[in-house]
Image: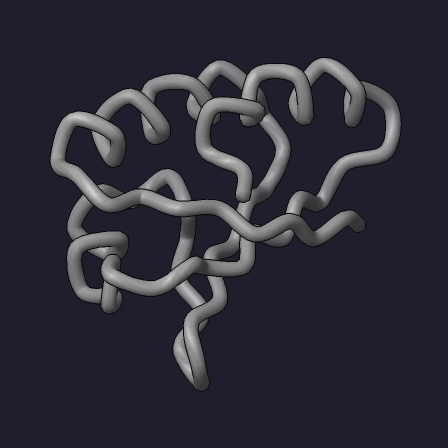
Length: 76
């Protein structure tokens, strides 16, 4: 598992983020304070405080480099 900080400070960013990670079968969790939600859930993402950076936990081993490359536009 790897954790990175991301910023999703616009509606368009949230939509493209969910589309990008939905290409993978791995599990992704967003952690904000005491809340943990499925990163593939647009409704779940909008329940978080998007004005602050969010921790993204990536549950992957084999294709981690490919995932991190795709996430570069969102990472802080």
